[in-house]
Length: 300
Image 1 (cartoon, helix red, strand yellow):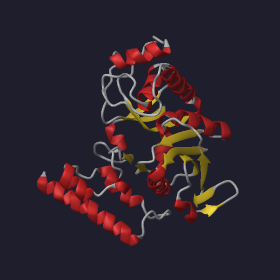
Image 2 (image 1 turned 45 degrees about the vertical axis):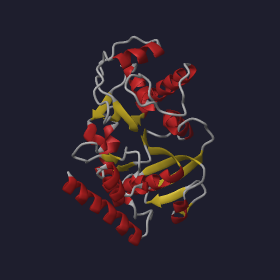
Image 3 (image 1 turned 60 degrees about the vertical axis):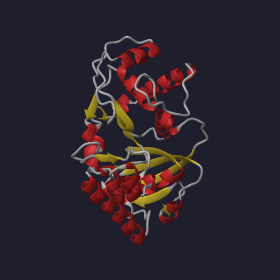
Image 4 (image 1 turned 90 degrees about the horizontal axis):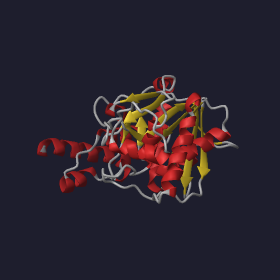
């Protein structure tokens, strides 16, 4: 059984809806477990309610789990995945997607990927982190683990797929998070500068991979999340202004920011089966992003 997980609060409910739509269109079969703070999204009223959750398509159930935690959701990813596994001991593969990702590949590709190893994609900012990089030495120091590491890559924590044979990685990721907190790490925010070995949950995932020479990792490049072409697997809208909040023409004129491929693809998953926008609203959104794209080509 495949289970997909994600976490959201506030306006990210629109991103979750697009993620769910993209999973349906990818022919995903299984359960989607959604952890959230605040209120349920209004679009749940479009779904068929059952005693245990909702039905969103043939062979797809959705469960919402209200969470009472005070840390940034980024740091809670491994704990949430572990919680879901404990409640669903029959799961064979578990996946986490950030709520600003849409899936563009057929699900059978993603589902079979975890048979090769823990499925992850390279980060867009720090794709290359040598096995002898200062960050890795800091990570090993925190773990009191000096085992040989041959990894030279740094992955984005917005997506991970894990087969049951590799679930131990989640315990290591959680242990790093706890050690980071014990060493006065702030779990309420992310740091930005590259001088820090610990800047957020992404470093903690990569740290746990550093001390996991007993596990196999299957790493796809920056194209895996649509940071570079071809965008054949998924698209991750990492920009600070999310597609559903963005006035693309305004962003282009004021800040010179062209619409990303991930932003464009988001609007391909706004109608079926969950309607995020009415047809007229969606036409306006697509017109806005199209005009901004044309303007971007003109300005250069």
